[in-house]
Image (tube, rainbow, N blue to C red; front, side, top):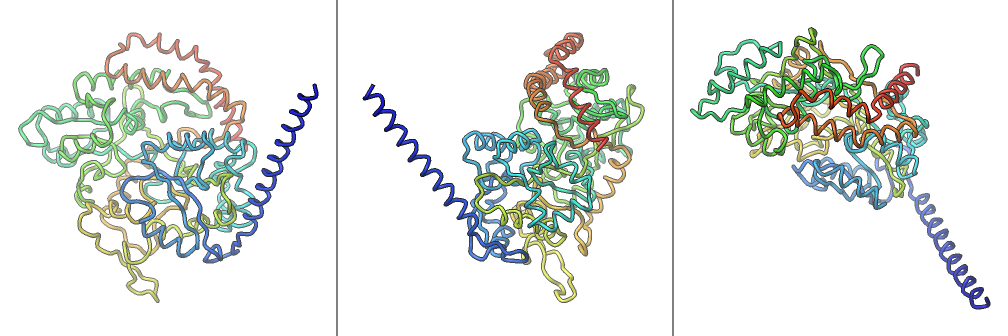
Length: 533
């Protein structure tokens, strides 16, 4: 017993010592945070240079530490970042690993809800990994606070059930702000070759045009190598094609206050039937469910694609912006089950674009760093970079600027811009919109015109931006694990014919056994809360 008592005393002493060290380290860390002098306004943000870490999706056009916009902003702010930028396609996996290990960067930037989901916000917020931002905003981010005061819809959309804000948004205003995803585009060269003067407005007319693309050699090379319609796993074109059958979303959507799950509706069955028809006749690329985005773009640059999705068409075709004005945007379609054309509309608010983690040693400086981009001046700087790259002064005293010619080696201004600023290909924390005093290019005018004609009259928000309670989120997560995987697999099987559509009822019954009624009710309750708030 004496030996046991001595051993117990020794262990207790060691644990006490470790606790004391931990407490001392925590105290030193708190003191270090308090000792960082942050200026209340203007630049620099901090008196003495500091270094933080930032994790963000990389688009591969340039290293972030070499981007002139970030280099200049580091000079302006006295804040330097170590940039951790895994490729966009691999970002979510890397972010999840960082969260799991606890080795998470001080700031998470540009993630968007596809990577930093609302559920992750709530979960990691409650675990104190993501920090609440509303008090920091009120005290140190006047531009953000002004936005939230003037736009209650924005505040409502980024505030979780527990009343906290864990991530900041992109708030969009401009020609593309209503875009749900990058649109579908037609190959203008093919349309001209076949003498097509009016785009299809029904699924039947669309089908007939795809047949012509397949059989009439519109690329003129004498080979039967044309691909009428192409995508990567249907992820980009699906929203536009679902709309032809009366659906706005591949999952939960709201119709006249009622929430439904579209993959078990008769509308969805009609969509699958149509897509299966296209696949069987090779009007839909046979490699749709196996190819990469790079393979898709390679086919576009070989002039082998008739209809394809991308943010701008020249991202796929490799053309110049001027040439891309000949590629018209997809015209929303009607069908036997949907007499009125409909497509999904973006709420023009993208969540998850900027979060501060518990590892961050300078919270005030971090919120001040991002606050600048919620001004017109800050957005212009983020979007167009510093003087001497994309623009220069024509009359600095009068505030007049002119665009500079893009250097050789770039197909478009967008390609060049992606090397200048991180505000390319990802959602960044800012208020985006037209830049005052900058004349619109012919391509800008084309995009605005196509959007006004092809999107604005038909677009509706599928489901508002809501947050779930912790209990709701746990139940929804449990259901979604198997549900989403099953629906995704079955879409590919139904379209490719691996699973015959005669098994539709069995498919629906399987989903019903996955607690789909409870799942729908969760989102109905969340919608009702949102509508009443």
